Every structure is written in C-alpha cells, then in structure tokens.
Image 1 (cartoon, rainbow over the protein chains, first blue to last red):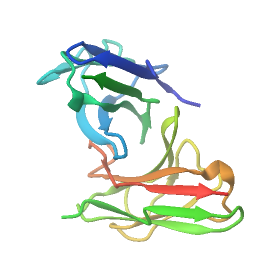
Image 2 (cartoon, rainbow over the protein chains, first blue to last red):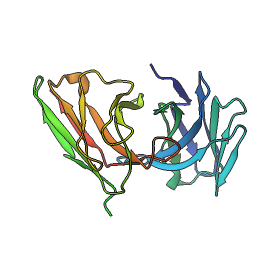
Image 3 (cartoon, each protein chain N blue to C red):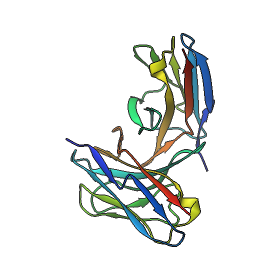
Image 4 (cartoon, one colour):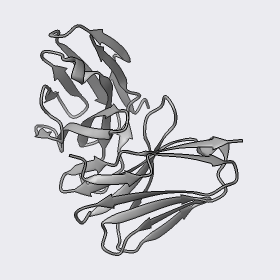
Length: 109
Length: 113
C-alpha cells in the first residue's frame, strides 16, 4: 500500500492566498523530492531535501524536511494562477522512489 | 535533446490483448523507471532498472514485464491486458539511483475495454 501519505488531496484557493501540502512517511526517508504536474502534463522536478530539518526556498515556494526525516511540507505564499497543478512529494527508501498521492491545487482568479 | 520519449501516446486494447510500451532516453542516464498514475493514487512504481542489465519490481509489478534493452531503452510489456490496467503510464530516468531527480516522459494513456 501507499507508504508516503500526502494531504490534502485537493485544495481550492483564491488567488493571493497561501497554500500548504504535507507529506508523511511511516519510516525514515533518505531524502525527499517534490514534483509539480500541470494539468495534462508530466511531473517536473522542483527540489530535493536531504538533511534533517532542512529548509529550502524557491521564490514563493518554501520546502521543509522534518527533524526525524519522516515528514515534509511545501508552502506557497500568495498563490498565482500559474501555480495550478498537482504537487507530489516522493520519498526515497532504498532503491525505490515512492510518491505520495499528490495535492491538486486550483487557484481562482 | 529530446529527454525521455515514450511511444505510443494513446492506446486502446481489448481484454486479453498484449502490447509493449516503449521508452528511450538520450541523457546517458543509468536508471530508468515505469510508473502508472491513477486518480487519487498518485504515481505507483511498477518496475525499475537501477543500471543496464538489472531490473527490479516496484510497488505494483503484477501483470507486467520489463526489458532494459540497452542503456537508452526500457520497455514495459502487458502480456494479457485487463481493465484494471487502464491508466496513464509514465517512463522516467535519472542519472543514478541515489539522489538524482527523475526526468519523466510525456506519458502513454492506455484504455483496456
């Protein structure tokens, strides 16, 4: 079954509002990656976190990796219509990269 | 530089038919993967190949076989298609199996009736 859980499954926001998606694993991950998939497209790599407690920023996006390396979050400040899509976390355990179910973000202008 | 190329883009099969999904990458990557994507289930790993000459099962390998033909190509075969295999299939590659990001192809939308 799914070993990397991601919530919420859907999020509808007004343009300008903030957005956060959370990723949780039952076991320790060696690293975590985040991907974005636009409607009708394929997943595109955004960032990778490796260290316990790591925080990385990309413009309006902030990524965190938990101290126990079992959870992660992606926060978008002041969403824009270009942020629409599904955001996936993916945790590496051994040789496998296991994806969460994704959070589908819609932004109302 | 095409990246990861998948063929076909769309396919409709009848139950029991067989087919092979093709994938090729031109980035000289060592590792290649096949995922399926279903609504609400995210991306689930079917099989992967850490390096040329090796293949391993992922989360949902039943009903599928793979071949790492050479460093560039990694094919996915459905021997006897079932309606439960209706899905979008993505091939991906990465430089190594470790910390490298995945590069995805555009996907194959498969319907089994």
